[in-house]
Amino acid sequence: MVCQITEAMRFNEAHTRRISSLRDALVNEVRRFLATQEATSVIARRQQSFAKELLDLGRLDLAANVIRGYAGELCARLSSEGRARYWTLIDSCAFFDDAVSAKWPYMTLEKRAIRIEWARQELGSLQSGENLAPSGQPSQ
Image (cartoon, helix red, strand yellow):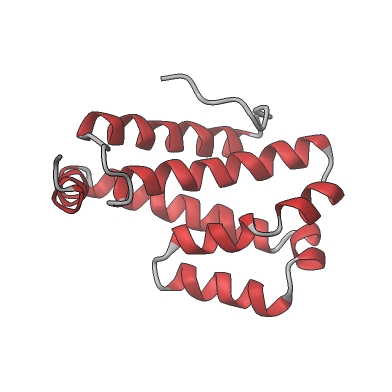
C-alpha cells in the first residue's frame, strides 16, 4: 500500500496553484452560504462562528462538516434549487478534500486528479448558476 501522506504531499506540490485557487473559491462559496438567510436561521450562531474560524485556519474540510451537520434542517427549508446548490457545495468540498488529504488508503494520484476535477466542476456549476441534481455526480 502506498503511503497516503506522501501521495497527498506529492499531489499538493505538483498542483499548488490549482489547489490554492480552488480552495480560495470554495472558501468564498462556503462563506457566501453561511451568510444566506436559510443558513443564519438554521445554523446556531456559535456554529457559524466556529465554521468561519475553521475557514480562517484553512480547514475547509471541517467547516464543510459543520454545515453538513445541518443538512436535515436546511433541506427542509430550502427550495429544490436551494437543496441542489447546498449538496453541490458539500460535494465540491468533499471532492476537494479527497484530492488533497491523506484520508483514503487507496487514493492514487490519478484518483486525486479526478476528484480535484470533480470539485472544480461542481464549483463551476455553483458559480454559473447551473442547477445540478443533488445526487448527480459530475462527469469525468
